[in-house]
Image 1 (cartoon, rainbow, N blue to C red):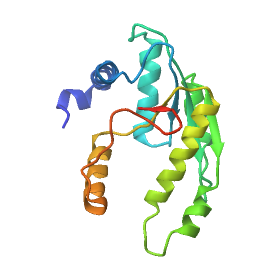
Image 2 (image 1 turned 180 degrees about the vertical axis):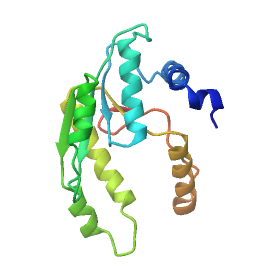
Image 3 (image 1 turned 90 degrees about the horizontal axis):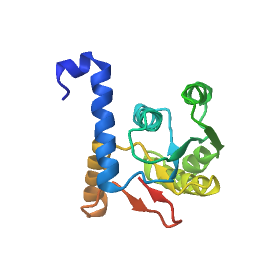
Amino acid sequence: MLASAQRDDPEKLEWRLLKSLRRCSGEFEMICEGDKIAVAVSGGKDSATMLYLLEQIRSRRLLPFDFDFVAVHLDQEQPGHDPSSLQAWVEGLGVPFHLVKEDTYSIVTERTAPGKTYCSLCSRLRRGILYTTAHALGCNRLALGHHRDDALETLLLNMCHQGQTKALPARYVATRGIDVV
């Protein structure tokens, strides 16, 4: 839980998050000199915060080297989805925006039994598309906006459904050679 002063002062919270990102970047080698990173932005608060913090780290030169990144949004063609406000916000930050349209929604709804969750199939399809897109854009890394709760949820799902104690690592190399952070 955040201290009251941090909730009341967005600047203090921002600096706390920037320090944490710098520390994690160094500890897990998540951002290195010369990297080109595809930052997956869903439009949710996790990925939006990550993108904003990366732009702040780069523009304030808080790392001792240069790196580049591009925002990547996957439009899965779910009914009613409109990425235009996300695109405007990202471009307003001065970050290049790459929109990928793939109809995974129809595939997932067609292949998932009634009453079952779409999550597993949707996640696999989404990751594959993001790996391919990152590679096509010349990126050596793909950044996903996961946080501690996501890691704990993955751990519990794997324990309950797979019988494995496996969670989200801070960094791994996907089968297509993309370094995922």
